[in-house]
Structure formats: structure tokens, C-alpha cells
Image (tube, rainbow, N blue to C red; front, side, top):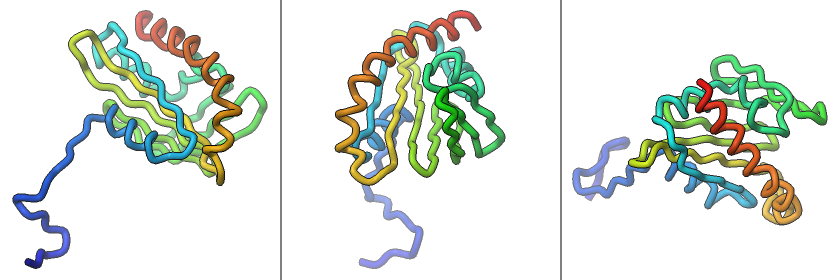
Length: 157
């Protein structure tokens, strides 16, 4: 059987993932990626309003000093003064940020208890999977603090 280019057969299986599941897939196929999820007791609109405002990220992510976001690009400066220019995909419930050496992402979906919110971080370097065990303990200590700060911003909006 042959098909036209771009045509999808009617009986072809389709996998339609919500944004959080999409982020999980990216984490699963990215060596050394870390993903942190939690359910926030707030409506989706309130959670995503804070998440989508990338220039407010330094208020909840402690390793970021500033973010300048314009359209599909962001310039992120860390407290160490290192800078990274990111290509950004930002839509309702989904944000993926890619720089030369870093990958970051956020995703959200409504749930009965509130909103599931996920954050992804990864190095985009050769052997990133070998570096992650060294950085993992540091990141694990900062994740709960970042999550508390994020939730406080959601409640304060």
C-alpha cells in the first residue's frame, strides 16, 4: 500500500499527549535530564500566568539572575554572570527553551486537585548523562525551594 507524502492513513495510530506528558518524553530521551512535577492547588490560568512570564523566572529559580524575553528568544544571565541565548517555544501550558548547552522546559495541565506543573532541566553536552550524577544532589536541594517560591507567586497574583 502506498500513501501520498504528508497523508496519514485513517487507521494510523495517533498519540496525543498533553504538555506534561510531552515534557516527560523529552526528559526520557535526553541524557541527564531532570524533571520535577507537583500538583499546585490553583487554577491552570493562574499557574500558567506566572510560568509564561519568563522575565519573572529569577523570582523563583535561584540560579537565574535575569531573563530578557522577546518573542522566540530569551537571554538568560546566571548569578555566575554566565549568559545563554535560548530559542523559546511558549504557548498555553508549554514552554521549551533551548540554548547551545542547556535545555529547559515547563508544562502544565489542569487536574481535579488543581494544576500539574512540571519543570525540566538538562545539559546539552556530550556525556551529559555522566555529569548529571554530580550535579543531581545540588539540584535536588534547590528544587523544593524553587517550587515553594513558584507557588507563592501563584498565590500572590
